[in-house]
Image 1 (tube, helix red, strand yellow):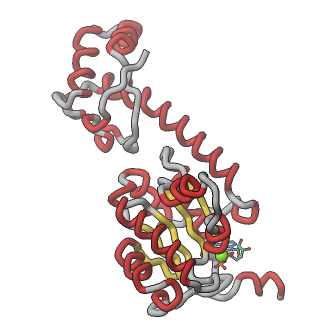
Image 2 (image 1 turned 120 degrees about the vertical axis):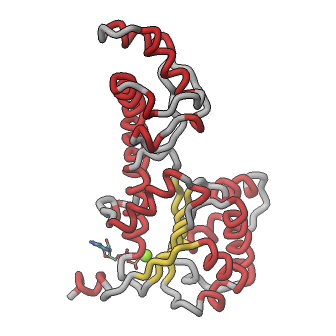
Image 3 (image 1 turned 90 degrees about the vertical axis):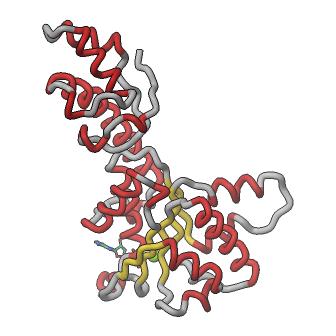
Length: 260
Ligand SMILES: Nc1ncnc2c1ncn2[C@@H]1O[C@H](COP(=O)(O)OP(=O)(O)O)[C@@H](O)[C@H]1O
Ligand SMILES: [Mg+2]
C-alpha cells in the first residue's frame, strides 16, 4: 500500500524526476525493501518519512535510500508516459502522427509539464504550408514524452466555432467549458476563419478565460505580426501577445513541394 503525501515536499529535481502527484512508497514498503536488501530497516524507513515531510533533503539520504525512492517513482513516470503517449496516438490526426519535436518544442514541453501555470503559451506563426500544425502536434507529443498527466484537446478555429454555435440546449455551457478550461489546448489557424462579431466574441471569451486561469495554449496563425488585431480583434491579440512565446516558422509551402 502506498501513502499519498503532498508532493510539494518531494525534491523532484534532486531525485532527477519530473514533478507530479506521486504515490510515495509507504513505511512498510521501505522496511520490507531494506530487509530484503540486508539493511537496517529502522533508519531506512525513518529517513524516507523525514524526506517526505521536508525534514531531510535528498543529499542526506543514503545512496540505497535514494535509489529505492527513485526506482519506485520512476515506475510511476514510466506508466504516466505510456498513458500520455497512448492518449496522443489515439487523438492525433493521422497526418501528424509521426511529428517529431525539435529542441525548442521539447524545452517548452518540459516547462509545461513541470509548471503548466507558469509557462507561457505558444504562438506558432508563419505562412500557409510551412508546418505550423505539424509543429504544434510535435510539441504535444513532447509533452506526452515527459510523462505529464496534462491532457490536451485540439481544434481548428473553424471547428471551434462550429462546436460552439449558438444553440438551445443545456449542454452548450458544459461544452464551452470543457474546451475553454482544457488543461492544454491547441487552437489551430486562428484568424483564418471569416471574421464575424460573433466569432470575435467567442474567441475573446475563450482566450480571456485561459488568460485569466494561466492555462497553456498552442495557437497557430498565418496572420502576419501586426495584423492579428485586425483578424481576431484587439482584445484577443493583446492577450495572446502577453501570454505567448512566439515561434516564427519560415520556409516554403511544404504542400507545394509534394505537388511539384
Ligand atoms: N518538419 C516536418 N517534417 C516533415 N513533414 C512536415 C514537417 N512540417 C510539416 N510537414 C508536412 O508538410 C505539410 C504542411 O504542414 P502543416 O503543418 O499542415 O502546415 P501549416 O499548418 O503551416 O499550413 C503536411 O503534410 C505536414 O505533414
Ligand atoms: Mg495548419
